[in-house]
Image 1 (cartoon, rainbow, N blue to C red):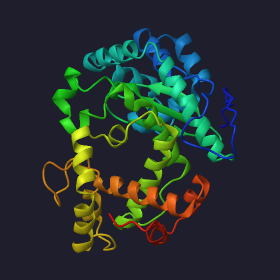
Image 2: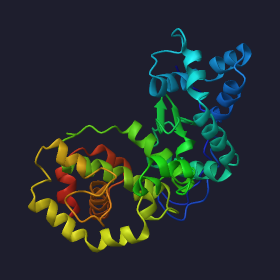
Image 3: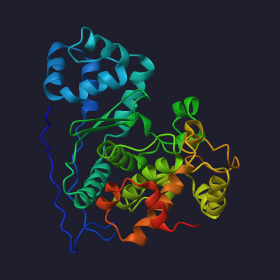
Length: 326
């Protein structure tokens, strides 16, 4: 089902191609508040509101059904009964209401999305920007993507100190659950949807280079976000990682983790908790950090464009041409 794109980007560059810095602001990207419309139905589940949801949000209902309710189709018997039962749970309903209230004013988000997607569209002219929504998942599915559709679960961005988070999430998880992460997470979700990983899941180098590409592009699309914010680190953790970058790389090489096809070992470099291969003070997701550094070096050495970067699927070639030697 095709969804008409309801927004345009009015971005004028004084130079050729795309750049991360000193670019003029784009028009804000309007976010469709599916979350508010669904809440209206949950609180008053009458037939007219149900018909309006089916008419206005067929793709979002389909994504919610498959991604959260484990139902194959909106037309499946009992779909709306299960939808109402899920969101009417008292704890979830309270979380839902608080999330909608917390994100009542989203002008900054819409401006950030407008700027970010304008940059990506300048880099990738063939990329069709999505229609963007907000939803509430009950701390479940964070990003939902479909045909020309991108939605983010706002109940996972209520702040590090949100009381409910302290019951269910570790410190290293909560640091990412802040409003400042909304725009980068939207862009990350869309890039991963547009450029799905096509390498070997069990090979560390291939996973690192892919993660590094995504981090590189998001950092360029969101230059106002510090590197530690994009990594989900504290400033102290980022300093620690940078100071030990050479040690981290040497450890990977000495343990022969870079090329050995081991799914369990490779996964540990991308988990949020600290990797067992380093000290407890070292943050998680080291694989993405190292991949990002390799891609940064590669782009400087080769002067490649973002489009050329994403078209290159040879991880070994990217590593070699990067001259990465921390």
